[in-house]
Amino acid sequence: MNRNDRTEKQSEPFDLHLHSNCSDGADTPSRVVAYAAERGLTLLALTDHDSVNGVKEAVFAGERLGARVLPAIEMDTEWLHELHILGLDVDIEEPRFVAALDTAQKRRSLRNGEIAERLKSAGYDIVPYLSSGTEVATRLNIALALVKGGFAENTKDAFVRFLRKGCPGYFIVERYSPEEVISLIRGADGIPVWAHPMHGHADVHKLADLLKNCGLMGIEAFHPSLSEGDSDVLISIARQQRLIVTCGSDYHGANRPDVLPGQTWLDHAALRECRALLEARPVRLLK
Image 1 (cartoon, rainbow, N blue to C red):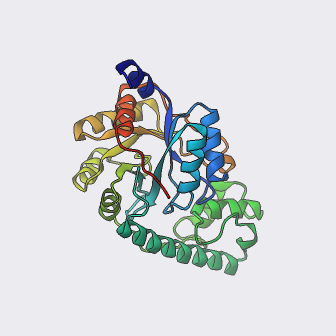
Image 2: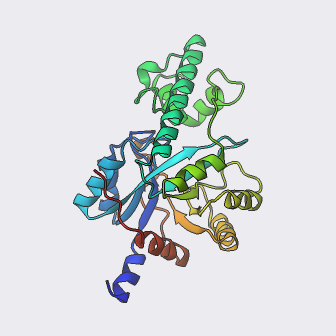
Image 3: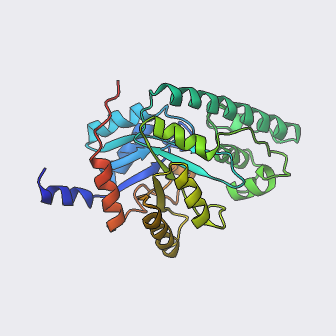
């Protein structure tokens, strides 16, 4: 590839934060990739919550459609507020990573079963309305089930009245610390990226410094939850901390119908640098 071709490639749109029905998205992994390709994306990452079950299907769909799909994941961490880490271009067969995901999924299944029981005891049986099994469901799946069952007006209402602390469907289990998650991702030769950094964090500068010291490599500075000003702040932090800058739509299909693949990408120098770094990594061959 000559210099002009490389420059053109770096300016192509991409999306490094997409969900399928292997966690709380509505579409199959192959449909996620097909829709992203229809929208002109040539690089993407399927980042289901604590699961890589849809990765192979997504990667093979990308190969058919001419889009590079990075094996990836989004992992929840143990923190005072919501703190999620994306793992981009991970080796999904690395033994320590595989074992950790098995533990995370068992914890998720335990949590979801307990939430379902607590809601049922309070008069809100959501099990018939869950679109996915309790072993992979996220709180968004549970909120959607509450809406489908007629117990809540919308997902926001479901979170406020049923899933927050002090509500009948509130229950948490032990999760990995941010340091453990970052270590797991790097141990699987992946790139740990702080997802939607403004979610519940008063001092992003301080937390970015803490996470960088734990091995963080990137920050999602372009996300539907972020204003242009937020993105500018996060890009500045990334420059100071020497982190790569990523963009992600956090696409969930019909479960979040106002979000589209690739909507947060723009032709920005920081994103061109990110793409160049990712394109320089060898393609992972999955069996």
